[in-house]
Amino acid sequence: MQSKIDEIITHIAHSHQQIARVLDAKRQVAVRMSEIINHLPDIEPELDGVDGLLDSSGQINKSIISYLGALQIWKRL
Image (cartoon, rainbow, N blue to C red):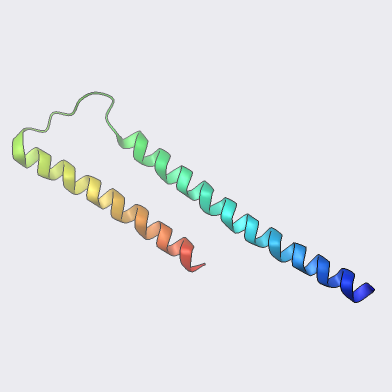
């Protein structure tokens, strides 16, 4: 009987670890999304033509790549 209880407790502990990992990953996504939103301008941006548009697009691409890289790190854990 004691071994069954031990197995159940071990299973519950493992489940709690997995839940903690999922919650931490969701927290990281929320933090990252809030960082991205904070970087959005409050007013319509002045892009200064094609060069400004390309520069802004490059910054957005860097942010997206950084975000996806962070997700990949969490996925490996």
